[in-house]
Image (cartoon, rainbow, N blue to C red; front, top):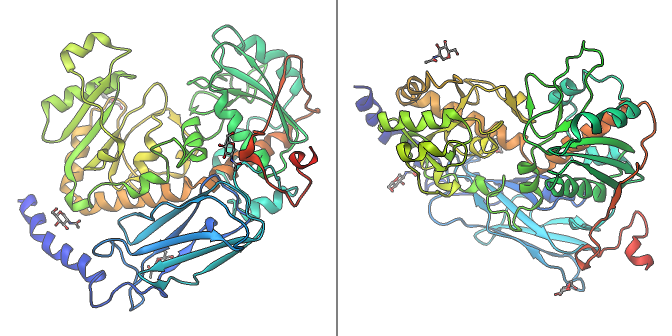
Amino acid sequence: MRRLARLQLLPLQLALLLAVGSPEAPVSAPRSLAWGPGLQAAVVLPVRYFYLQAVNSEGQNLTCSPPGETLFKVVVKSLSPKELVRIHVPKPLDRNDGTFLVRYRMYETVNEGLKIEILYGNEHVAQSPYILKGPVYHEYCECPEQDPQAWQRTLSCPTKEPQIEEDFASFPNINLLQMLNEVPKRFGDERGAVVHYTILNNHIYRRSLGKYTDFKMFSDEILLSLARKVLLPDLEFYVNLGDWPLEHRKASDIPGPIPIISWCGSLDSRDVILPTYDVTHSTLEAMRGVTNDLLSIQGNTGPSWINKTEKAFFRGRDSREERLQLVQLSKENPQLLDAGITGYFFFQEKEKELGKAKLMGFFDFFKYKYQVNVDGTVAAYRYPYLMLGDSLVLKQDSPYYEHFYVALRPWKHYVPIKRNLSDLLEKIKWAKENDEEAKKIAKEGQLTARDLLQPHRLYCYYYRVLQKYAERQSSKPEIRDGMEHVPQPDDNTSICRCHRKRSSREEL
Ligand SMILES: *[C@@H]1O[C@H](CO)[C@@H](O)[C@H](O)[C@H]1NC(C)=O
Ligand SMILES: *[C@@H]1O[C@H](CO)[C@@H](O)[C@H](O)[C@H]1NC(C)=O
Ligand SMILES: *[C@@H]1O[C@H](CO)[C@@H](O)[C@H](O)[C@H]1NC(C)=O
Ligand SMILES: *[C@@H]1O[C@H](CO)[C@@H](O)[C@H](O)[C@H]1NC(C)=O
């Protein structure tokens, strides 16, 4: 009965959708909107980006893609014909809701400035052309803003980051000598994955305290990237590159907890968390070798809601027992759930019984209306990507969290499921029977994730953690025995003239 009732609604919904983008009220180039950090010269990011909202001639926002091929076109070029620069500008990403995401990556600095033309058909959109007065620096240019406050204002960094406040609440004072004494002993054994960093005068030094520190390439790359953009405080800290958070002492314990910095947090540990290496690397290397990044995913969210397969979906490795249960549930309830394990490592004996599913491109996940998020070893690092799609996320209850979870609420941004999955089928049925509500939660989750996971917000977050940490240090950071300097790239990708200081390159 319910099914029938919903089907009868469909033509009406379709008619409504079509009416918004109807030929009678076509997209108006001048009334359409353009905004975002990529329209400001001073916001230096690996990939610059801004947004477009299609608006019709009556001034109404379109809420789905204009019919036919995307007519938005963006041209980014140097203001001065004398300055030749390479800029990669892929086609605007259609986010399927009347908005578009425009990205561009600069490979050189332009001193005079940039001209950004945004066209719909042959007409200029909003205030196009946008003139970004130079210098406009590229990612590898070392030219830190000397005033961190000014830099944060330029990026419109949020004034509050509740997760950071909470993480530092246990650490009013950071005793660097105590940490120097304790960290190598407690966490620096053979199996250790901790890297000890010192930042002095915006230079980065480090030593590894353990064998499993290859992931320092990720912490190095973001610290170097930050140091190219803004003057960092002097700091001495420890980054845990392993999966699990490390500090399990309670605030009341003696000796008390120490602020180890980790990618993932948990309810029973006190680590200070940063955005995961996955989110970080995907932001830094977007459009340069990383295929699924937090921006590209936004233009690849599959069919519209009404055309998605009405099942919950999961593909992933066997890193947690509940994932195997998920496959079992899927076998018993194929009409509700399509779950498969794509690689066995932890539970190899189960492969015969449960079978191995073919690998599937991430963008194809969004052919399904509901996405199941079950922890891996710790938090599942696919969660940010799932939240950016326009499917409803069914999230397993978990003691693990990443830096942005604190802003997300059950039933508002996602649907919670019990840790043992005992209510999963019930929740999928609920979603099928309450399609409007499910769609609303999916949309709300997507909008919030789009906001929280913007690349410039990632930089804000990192900076804020370093700043909070620096404020609490009770002695001066030092370059310790065994540390080595981590240099900025000095090949020809980094060539630029920095107006804030003479670059070392030019002094040569
Ligand atoms: C139209 O879209 C813009 C950008 O997405 C938004 O800020 C604005 O509030 C929308 N206007 C209406 C009337 O919904
Ligand atoms: C749904 O799919 C049908 C068939 O491919 C297509 O004609 C229709 O435009 C789609 N609807 C939406 C809203 O995308
Ligand atoms: C699943 O966990 C809930 C608590 O969240 C518990 O009440 C229930 O008995 C568990 N179910 C199974 C099958 O273990
Ligand atoms: C940078 O160096 C590489 C090889 O060393 C060369 O192929 C490339 O053309 C150079 N680029 C510039 C802008 O000089």
